[in-house]
Length: 319
Ligand SMILES: Cc1cc2nc3c(=O)[nH]c(=O)nc-3n(C[C@H](O)[C@H](O)[C@H](O)COP(=O)(O)OP(=O)(O)OC[C@H]3O[C@@H](n4cnc5c(N)ncnc54)[C@H](O)[C@@H]3O)c2cc1C
Image 1 (tube, rainbow, N blue to C red):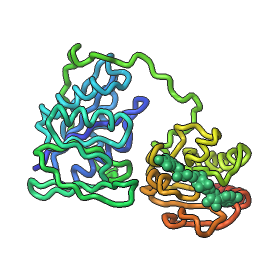
Image 2: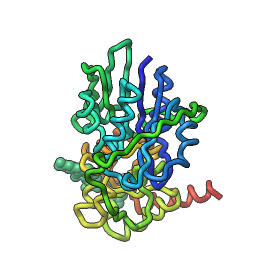
Image 3: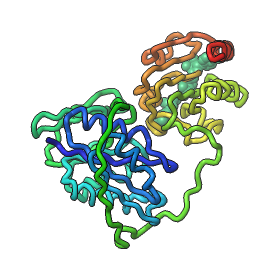
C-alpha cells in the first residue's frame, strides 16, 4: 500500500480545504494517508486533521514556526516524511507549498512534479498529469524515482466531507539548527478583501470596464456575491488594479466554483490562470472574443448594461 504524506495548509489558524482534498484523494486511491502540520500553537487543529482523514498526524509546533519560512518548514516535512517512510509527499498549490516542495524533494532525493491535476498509480509505477505551455497541452509524466514530491493544483481533487481518520499524534522535534532563518514580521494586504486563492466565486475585470467608475460598478457585483475581486493584466499595467489581483500566467492561478470574466478578451495568458474554474461566465460585447471558447455561459453585450441586470436578478433570487 502506498504511503502518502499530505502537508497541511494552515491559514490564520484554520485548516484550508486543500488539506481535505488531498487526503480524500489519497484515501480514494487506497493509500495510507498521514498529515504533517507545521506552525505555532496549532494543537487546536488536531480534531480537524483527524476529521480530514489522516491516520497519523505529525506535528511541528514551535514559536519559531509562527510565520512561514521555507527552510524550517521543509526541515519539519522531511523529518515527518522519513519517520512515516512516505512514498509520496503532497502539497497544495499555494505560495508556501511551491516554496517548500523543491527543498523537500532535494533533501529526499525525490522527483518533484508541480501543478499536477491528476495522478495515476499502478503497482510501483506513478504517472502524473499536468498542464504545460500556458495550459495549451496536458503532459503525462512518468516518475522514475522511488519517491515523489507533488504540488497539486487547487480544486484538482474533490473533498470527501464524510471522511474521518484516527488519532495517532507524533510530535516532531524542532532543533535550533532547523531555525537558521525565521521570518520576524509579515505585513499583509490591509484591504480586508477576500483572498482570490480562497474565494469560491471570483469576479474579474478587464480593459472593457475602462476606468475606475467601471471597476467600482463591477466591484458591487463581487460584493453582492461575497466574491474575490480579480483583474486581467491590462488593468494592472494601466495602474487601476494591484498586482496581487492579477489572474493569469504571471499572476494568480485560481480555480473557484464560479469565475466571472467581465470585459476580458480571454488572452491565452489570462486563461492560464482561470480555465480550471468549475463554471465560467463571460460578459463581452464582442461575440468573437476568445473568452467565449472557455465560457460555460456567455453574455454578448455591453457590460455597463449587463452587470446592473445581473445584480438585480441575483439580488431578487437572494431575497
Ligand atoms: C509574457 C506575458 C504574460 C502575461 N500574463 C498575463 C496574466 O497573467 N494575466 C493576464 O490577464 N494577462 C497577461 N498578459 C497579457 C495578455 O496577453 C492580454 O494582453 C491581457 O490579458 C488583456 O487584458 P484584457 O482582456 O483586459 O484586455 P483586452 O484584450 O483589451 O480586452 C478587453 C475586452 O473587453 C471587451 N469590451 C470592451 N468594452 C466592453 C463593454 N462595454 N462591454 C463588454 N465588453 C467590452 C472587448 O471586446 C475586449 O474583448 C500577459 C502577456 C504576456 C506577453
